[in-house]
Image 1: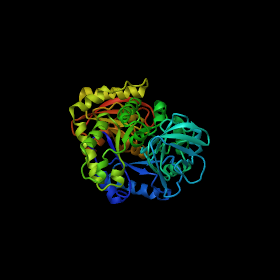
Image 2: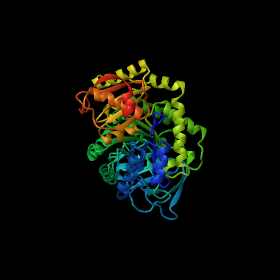
Image 3: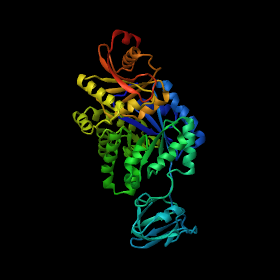
Image 4: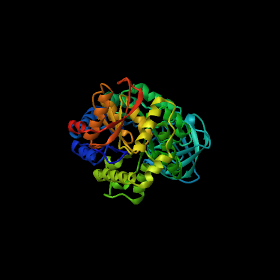
Length: 479
């Protein structure tokens, strides 16, 4: 199955999509990676869900990517007495404290001592997904006296967001640790960590995963932006989780933040995913708004590796239509004349390594000769990652003997992964690259392709060779 676009599509599984029949339709419509939201998934059912998705590989003869998204800490206020809530007036004083007694008009329990310890005067406390806003006036380890800036109805166990406060607690809860272990053991390809504030959070995830899956950091806290470069360096990929970012920082700052994260990830060669509310209206409508179409198009123009559907595919009434729409938007944007110029303007200089120099050389040779295909032999996937960083005009066919590598590369911009045995020598490398380029319908008789590999074969990270190969009659016959 050949995609006609470079950017990848991630779809979240849920009640509207978690059947073999619907997953097959979604994959055919354009999904490259399926996201499993661990907030709504039991560890006991995870192996069966993954087995269902792996069955698609046999049906479509293509690798299928699987992303497990960890829930992260759920910070909430305690319970109120009476009818279960109060109305906070603007300008009123309201206390968050360590007393577990039912809440009143004046106070409520905050069952997170780490928050009370970290709060300082002037810090903003946001409640119920941005509906209420408080400012801390006095703080101690047992209580925080706040002033209500934006009031409203506050009910029991509503969420707490802290845009100014760095909490001295790991991003991983006990549930996350258990879920991460279960997901890695079950064979997912990527694991996303929520609530990331610092690079050490990603180190915690890596200790659990131990290389069985790649680690993705979700940027949804303003605190993460203070150490963004370190977090990107500590991660295998980044998700711009705009929903939570939009709660904890002014909405008008989110678009610029999205661009800054996207460009830094591209410069460092780390896949970047733009997520949340991309086609939100398609939860209940068969067509999106014009603004949503423009939002998806912006992510494509920026050169993001993937765009993601959440409730649209998990619980929406039109999951197939949402995927198809996202697919069509991406194809249309990538055919625009200005698309290439935007990508080229953001090209980063290669790092001072042989592999990066080879990737740049392959890109320049392909451009100079107007070649459609760069075939990369790769064991770990690092060669394909480096080529994708270049955002070449050519499709990157990643030839790998490692099925796990092929699955991970389903998330990476412009990469079409094929599982095959490793090359035996240089001639075999070129010949089979041509054969697969024809078989996958990217090349035809008489075409030339670029072949990138490392010698000796099978040595991870040893990319050191570029070769131009010619598609001959024998390659077409073998395909």
